[in-house]
Each structure stands twice: as C-alpha cells, then as structure tokens.
Image 1 (tube, rainbow, N blue to C red):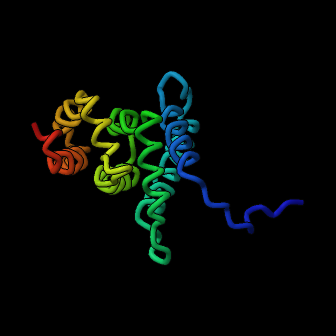
Image 2: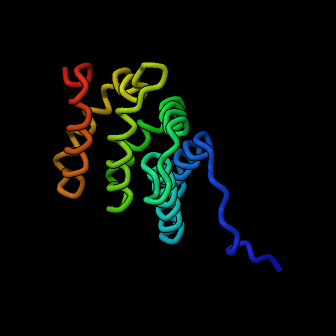
Length: 161
C-alpha cells in the first residue's frame, strides 16, 4: 500500500509549470468538458497550477523566489503561448484563479530575460490581447482583474501606445 500523500511533492521546474498551466487551461474548453464534475476538476487543476506559478514567482512566505527560475518561467510562458491562453480564459476562471493570475501578471511583465521583457514583447506581437482585456472590462465580474492587468501593461511605453 502506497502512502504517497505523506511525501512532499517534488518542486516543478519552470517548463513543467508552464506546460501544466497550458494543459489545464486547454482542458477548460467547453468542447472537451462534457459534464459538471469534469469542469470542476479542470478548474481545480487550473487553480492549483496558478498557485504553483505564484509561489515560484513570489515565494511562499518562508522561501524567497529563485531569480533564475522566475526568469525561466517568464520565458517559457511566452514561448508556450500561455499568455494568450490565460487572457482568453480569464472570463471563465474562478475568483481565486483570477486573483492569482493578476498577481503573477504584474511579476511576469516586469521580468527581464537577457535585458528584454519577454512577456511584454509577446504582448506587443499580439496586441489583440489588450483589445480583449478592454472588451472584457465591460464584464462586471472580471472588470477589476482586467483593469489591473491593463494598468500593469500601460507601465510599458510600447504597450501604452
């Protein structure tokens, strides 16, 4: 008999976190989610992955974030098109997931990799994401989240234009 719940889970690497977030967000597609239980399970997985990302980006209160891991995560999230996915899935995410996402968004945008802001560059190449956030601002449930994300974006001159 295995007592795996007593073992601490091994820390995930940035590429694993980016892939887990991408996979869990893709699992939220209404075409693949046939029943309520499956949707709830998919939502829990998304929230769990966002908490993992938040801990990796800002630490967990006891341990400071690893600067190299933060940079690598920002790079992986840009490379794997996770930014586009989180923006488009924002309206269907739960409150906790949205809160964690906004916190991570501000850290990711400010993250420099090789003297470049890789997440900002990704958004520059996909300006429709900013348009989507502006449109979603009309939705009362996510207006605060969209507003905070847009506010973070306009701190960068290339995104404010």
